[in-house]
Amino acid sequence: MTGMPSTLSSAGRSAAWVAISKWLGLISGLASLVFVARLLTPADFGIYGYLLLVLVVPEIFTSDSLNEVLIQRGELRREHEASVLLSSLMFAGLFFSIIQVFAGPIAGLFNTPELEMYLRVMSIVLFIGALTAVPAALLQRNMQFRQVATVDVIGYVVGAVVGISSALIFKNAWALVAMELSRRLVRLVFFAVFARWTPSFRTTLEDFHGLVRFNLASLGLRMIAVSELAIPRFFVGLVLGPAALGMFNLAMRVQDQAMQALVSPFGAIAFPVASRTQDDRPALFRTMTAAIWIAGFIAYPAFIGAAAIAPLAIPFVFGEQWTGAVTAIQLSLLMGLRLPTASFNGGVLKGVGRPGLLLKVSCFSVVLLLITIPLASTLNLEWVMLALTAQKFVSWGLSGWAVYIAIKYPISNQVLAGWSVLISALVMGAGIYWLQMTLPTELAVVIRLLAAISAGILLYFAMLSLTARSGFFRGLRVAKLFMTGKSGPAMEMLKGAI
Image 1: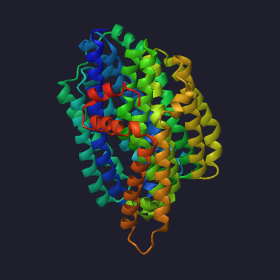
Image 2: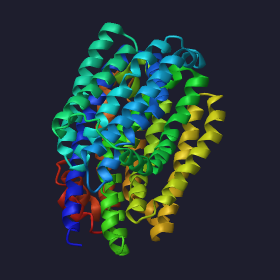
Image 3: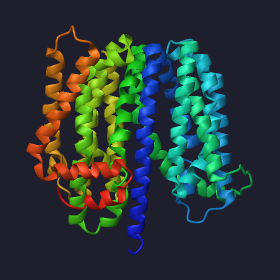
Image 4: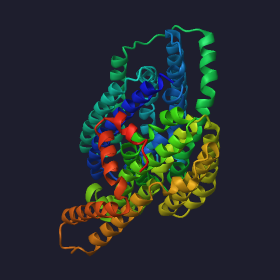
């Protein structure tokens, strides 16, 4: 147990750098998204969505999974690195060739002829990902998260500059392609520099066999994970068309960026903390309860407040062409209410040695999508979002049940751990919605938004001081510690019950 405190401290520092990266990425990503979305149409974003959909499975084999063996292996040799590089490049060449041959039929499937040329160009990212896989794994293996965060921020900034410039010039989906290509090229170059990595192709057949054995399970889990992402996008794009897909992708991107910035830094501690305290269930329960409260303290008001102001904010921020996405974005944000609890469940199950339960929940989630999404897509985008929301909350309940099976942490505790902040956020959301609807329409939109947001913040903290007086100031202190990178003291504070 002597190494546990230092391991936990390292995990805390890593979580802090992840938080910094996500926050800076959120700022630059939203800034570029706002500018580009005002210059492009939902159909342009839909075309880009088709590209991501076609590439989602190839990228599992070229960049997202095969490099995990380099992080896991105790003794690492150059031959192992070469095995990953060669395997990634072979898959990149295979899928690149398939896309070049079938780009036309794929474009025909989605009834979007211009998609063909986009696919031929965008498939270059497969080779970029294959070359990035090894240095990215080396940086993670060596816990060089500060360098990873630095590269991510540089990539976001460069991508934003390229994307906005391209949108001004081309005024179509090529701006989004240019943004993504430039961001990935930055990651490749700087990851290789920071990892001090140069390509090597010298390996052995034995190393290839070891790579295949390790990655079979990892690839299976990845395939299930991307299926959850791809199924709704496929049916929205196939049945409802590129404009609906563009709106769907914007809605899910808003939720995803908010999750990465607001919840993921806290969820990052679940695995190491659960691993360390798995034999001390009372301590694990106290930590989970406190962590859920802290995550909800930040996430609940953000998701609910954003959903409340969406009818005014979306057309004002992204442009009138995105008015049709308001309901989809609101439902996407309300899906986020499960995240303060759900984000811990996977890490806890892995930490106590029960990843099989997580796999079963994921498989059921995919089956549920296959049943509901095709039917919902025959109606409209709002029904797709409702079906997806129902699926997410059912899966959340099942993951909570899996945690109960694994460690006997009561489901009621999981649901009620953040009740005080949830109630405060709901009252805040109702106040924001009422105020923005009752303010005179003659007022400028920006004034109505600022008034609603300011009133909501005051209402949230007023309610929270009543519903959670004992945890109110502790929540502020822990949130401040996390957001300023002092995750070690924050994690120690989480051990106390709120």
